[in-house]
Image 1: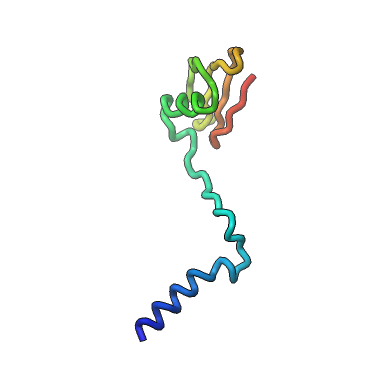
Image 2: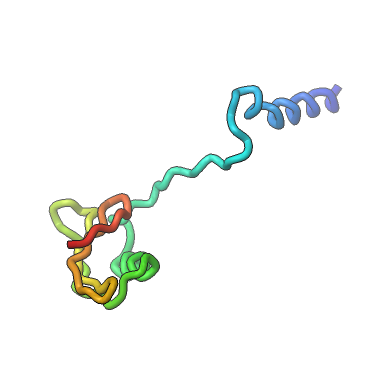
Length: 93
């Protein structure tokens, strides 16, 4: 009896995505739950370096927003003002 119950549970788990019409060829993306506001200055710098920025300086958390970082950085040979928003999106002026 225990074997039948165990097989039933395994079957349900194995075939549930197909039964619900979910595409099994692509993994479901995990939502990004990390906010830039929770990152340290060094972690934000490393994020910028990883996205192709160099010489990141004057990086400060914007006090009014709590989660936005601003600073200066070099990309493509140009020094620009760079902003990282609370979701980690980088923009430059």
